[in-house]
Length: 120
Length: 107
Image 1 (cartoon, rainbow over the protein chains, first blue to last red):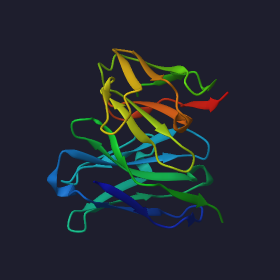
Image 2: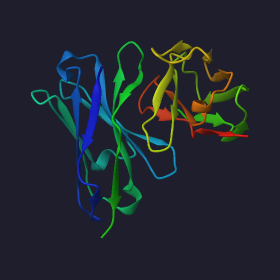
Image 3: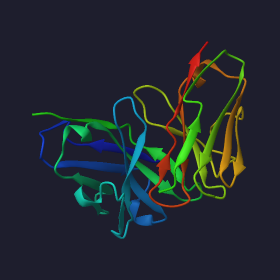
Image 4: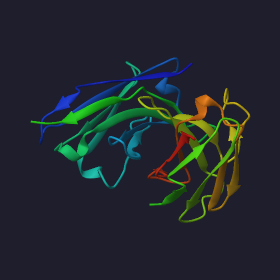
């Protein structure tokens, strides 16, 4: 059973950079075939796709956030990371990591989510 | 970006009811449409992928249909654990996009 677990600060100050890590267990990022993704959900709102990283390190970022997003992968630790710079209150959200692709071409496994609040 | 319009935004139903939620994509997405439900404080859970394929472990009362631009999720015989918010999502291309959600509430 694949499991994903987000970790990182719950509180970030405006203008700072958010750094989150997603640790994968029960499956290897290195095996390929999946897009390791980040999605966020503003309080009481819908879901916003941030982007993905492949095991090779290739990335896709949503154009709406592209200028502020960086993703990386560490296959030796079986984890991948998200950095989002120049945080503002509008970035307050629950951030999820998820696995995309494979035979479902859907987000079939999700982390439990981590609430990030941007506040002075 | 492909827009996915979901309706209704909310509905009230009773246990045992048949419920239908629809999604319409802004362009043809073949069968690259997935359905999730989400309970408060938890992550979305995949129910249906490829428009009509039931994800492993999901009860058969959930069915999906459609192709091209119009899709439907049907819950036959609503159960207490089905009261949640439902989202559709297109996986035809990037950026992946989601419908706005349908909140299914108890009547």
